[in-house]
Image 1 (cartoon, rainbow, N blue to C red):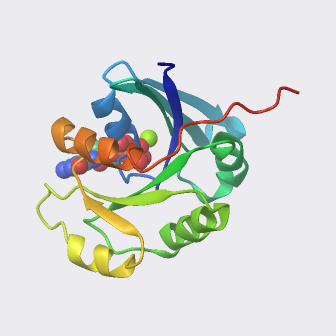
Image 2 (cartoon, protein in one colour):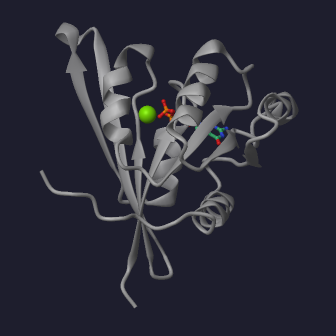
Length: 167
Ligand SMILES: Nc1nc2c(ncn2[C@@H]2O[C@H](COP(=O)(O)OP(=O)(O)O)[C@@H](O)[C@H]2O)c(=O)[nH]1
Ligand SMILES: [Mg+2]
C-alpha cells in the first residue's frame, strides 16, 4: 500500500509552544530563524516529520506575530489539517481569535490543542468554553506520549494529501 502523506500546520501566538510541540513530536525537527528589519525582529519556521503506521505527517510551525500574515499564507498552502495551539496559562486574546477566524475561513479540518496544561496556573476550562464547536484537546507540548496520541487522533479524521498540479 502506498504511503499516505499529510501536511499539518501548527498555528498559534508567539510563546504558545509551537516549537516545543514540533520538537517533542520529532526530536530531529528543524527550527529555522531569520532576522528581519535590520535585526529588530525574527521570523521563525519549524519543520518536523512524524511517522504513524504508513502515514507520513509533515508538521509546519508558522510565525506567531501579527505582521507575518504573508508567511502564514504561504506555509498554509495545501495543508490537509491545522492545529491551533492555545496557551492555557493566559486568556484567549484577539490575535488567537484572528487565527481561529482565518483557519475557519480555509474550510479545512482543524483541532484546538490547549497547551501548557501541565503548568501551574493553567486554566483549560475557559479556553475550552471559548472554542465550543471546535474539537479541543488538552495537551502539554512537553509530554510526548499525550501529544502524539492527540496528533494520531486528529490525523485519523483526515483525508490524505492529494498531489497538486505542478507549475
Ligand atoms: N509548562 C509548559 N511550558 C511549555 C509548554 N510548551 C511550551 N512551553 C514553554 O513556553 C515557552 C514558549 O514555547 P515555544 O515552543 O518557544 O513557543 P512558540 O513561540 O509558539 O514556538 C518556552 O519556554 C517553552 O518551554 C508546555 O506544554 N508546558
Ligand atoms: Mg517558535
